[in-house]
Length: 240
Length: 317
Image 1 (cartoon, one colour):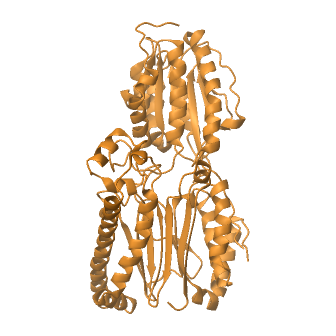
Image 2 (tube, each protein chain N blue to C red):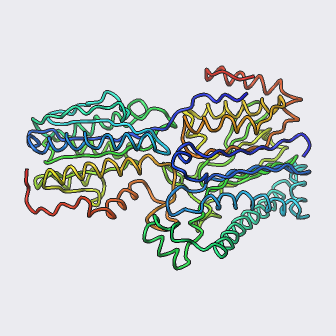
Image 3 (cartoon, rainbow over the protein chains, first blue to last red):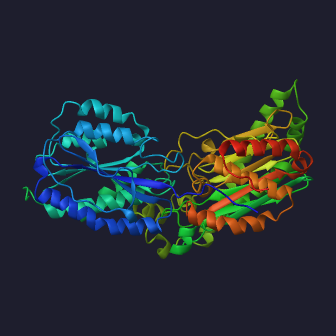
């Protein structure tokens, strides 16, 4: 009688990388907290019905230093968002260092054949005030999980360092700038849901171009372009 | 073919059942007088591949027909025979000739699959309801009669075993494994750098021929497989480690060696594999030299038990 052993569902980790520096204090960090809480049930539903992967969440905050709010990735159905607080500086370099550490089999990407490339969602309203971020980003770019990952960033307000965020995602098409709490919430919802949908599917042939093989990042760019009207922020000035 | 048994099984994925989506995998096997074959195909799941269930079925059926034609061709059979009995002088020349004939088999297969798709499209043009969720660019192309093969897109893995030669090819993701007389598993084709993460090549692609990864194994060489296995990615994605998949294959061998009804067993076990694993459609097929395993099981069982002990899991039987 056949008794297969070692059966597992593959996993896809959605990383929230959140700037919790002092400038995020107030409506910005409140909007982040609220939006993530609100999108979790949708992610849970997706994970239950998803064809190919169990969705997990990992949260990395950074201010004077970076810190994991999840000791390991959490299944979305067992994950409770603990409200983030904002104060201190913007040590992006430490965040990239800690992210690089966990984007490994010994870190959060265990289960050698059981993990899809992750989705990395960076949110920040300022520029890094540490000297190490360029060096750490260079190291991160050599990480194979990072190379394959979906990478999206949200620039919160006019003071956000878009060029830095672009260095992280590798393309301006995956930088979304918002000026209001409502726009921020929409972006968080859209990026969380869409990156999880794309990231947790198994192999496919390209969507944007007939028969072209495309990466998950390409698919994400396509989704952002196709649905930009859902979260376009028409405000010219910041309303925080 | 005396002593050989072929098997094939496909089960609709758990998530497809829940969502009411058809099974997009297909599989097929055949045992003839001179050869046995097995194939699995995984129709693409995206919205623009809305006829991939047919595409995967066409691929499985056309491979059967192409191999039949190949084996029936006197020149090709002469090459198979010459390879099976070759060694030393003239071997490389025969292998080169065989490779040319094999290339033609692959080209014929791709051509016939495309023809089959065209016939299906002509008799059943795309309906509005099928294209409702297709992206604009693809829909425009389909309406212009362009790239219609994409709607039938599928991966393909096929193997053919004769007494002296084992050959096959793969387009897209999935796994082709052989196991030798010592019980060691090995991949029959090289990894394709185009297949990374969620990306796969496809039978519907313009580069399907160059994307086909072929293999030929000669009996006279060491490492001739006593069994070959083909499975769609829904199978390996259900296991935490590749060794778990090997254990599963090993159980299939033992079941077949002991005379079990492998089709019934697979029909019973694959739904659970999908439900608790990938949730995707799952297909497994293979050709097994049951005669050898029955007569020479000592070596195989020793190796199987040794391999099993080393990875710490139990062996059934």
